[in-house]
Image (cartoon, rainbow, N blue to C red; front, side, top):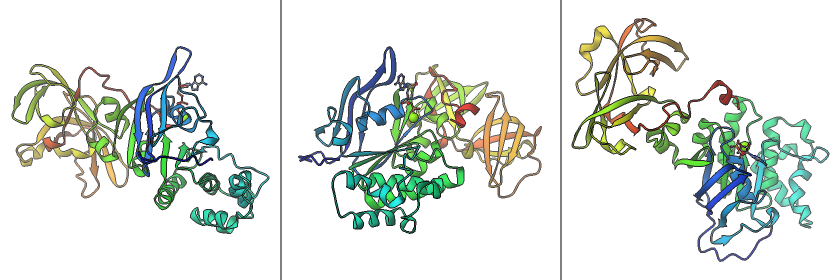
Amino acid sequence: MTETASTDRGGDDVRLTGISKSYGSFHAVKPLDLTVPEGSFFALLGASGCGKTTTLRMIAGLEDPTTGSVFLGDRDVTGLPPHKRPVNTVFQSYALFPHLDIYENVAFGLRRRGIKSVKKQVGDMLDLVQLGDYAKRKPHQLSGGQQQRVAVARALINHPKVLLLDEPLGALDLKLRRQMQLELKRIQTEVGITFVHVTHDQEEAMTMADTVAVMNGGRVEQLGAPAELYENPQTTFVANFLGTSNLIEADVAERTGDELVVTSAGVKLRVPADRCAAHVTDGGRLLVGVRPEKISLAHADDEGSIPAGRNRITGRIVDSSFIGVSTQYVIDSPVCAELEVYAQNIERDGRLAPGAEVVLHWNPAHTFGLDADQDIDAGVKTVDEEGA
Ligand SMILES: Nc1ncnc2c1ncn2[C@@H]1O[C@H](COP(=O)(O)OP(=O)(O)O)[C@@H](O)[C@H]1O
Ligand SMILES: [Mg+2]
């Protein structure tokens, strides 16, 4: 890494302007503008093949953009080779030197720059990733999670302004993944530099990042804080890819002040107008969304006790899965054949079993509206993609 005198007026935000990458006639990344604020933990989230790695490699200088520029603060780094950018990358394959011990693996970047006294810096880095006791071991004598931490230490010792992480936890089993998510988050908070983290795992992105950019087919579909994306998806892809959404095709019946009334198979539902990501016209169509955990389930015999003013749909339970903290129900209804409901496991109503007639009800404020001219199943995870 080379420190170039920086005017620093724009801080050290990473800014991509009109950046794109094509391979022949295939557009891996379509022209996009993206700002990653200095010091943030930023995630690029999307299914396999959506252009995450290509975007990251353009930031690193490992890939030349077809169009557009990469800025660090107000410095245009588009023409700089990777080693001249204050950026380091951590890959899923940790790429440690097998014949060097951990200490020398971490010291490598300093030695290459001709720095003689590396002891203090290497010691500090090993402490940061909590591997001080492992300095003399070889990589194969460490667990996957420990090797990943060595890879992070080896990248951070160069004092990059930006650390790029490409599916860094992809090779770890689920439990270790969860631990390492918290660990990486702690390290980022401690060093305070910008992390750009690529993952196809929506839970991972939401756990770790301040800001998530959801990518789909070479574009950023939506960008925001995890809770904002989850609560206010703007597209069916984001609604389905981030958690699960029930999406119902409906017709707009009327607009009363700040609320819309829509109908689907004769059922009336209320939607807050300010939660509609679509241009709404009377008689127009809308996809109405509600998250499974926002819905309560009552046995049809108890319909009378449901408070007034709630959105309600009648249906029949076709499947229920007890998963400890909650039970997940699938309900067949006139508006949609597979509505999902997650019920926290507090007191279980034994009548809520497959075959039971039920009423789904929820606070209309938890309803959102999406443009109906979209694929209602965009972003629904298939078994293949889950394991990607
Ligand atoms: N060198 C290349 N030549 C042709 N196509 C490529 C090349 N690198 C990547 N691609 C294609 O570009 C798309 C995006 O790839 P990538 O950025 O690696 O996706 P992700 O990291 O999101 O899985 C994929 O369809 C991939 O096959
Ligand atoms: Mg990738």
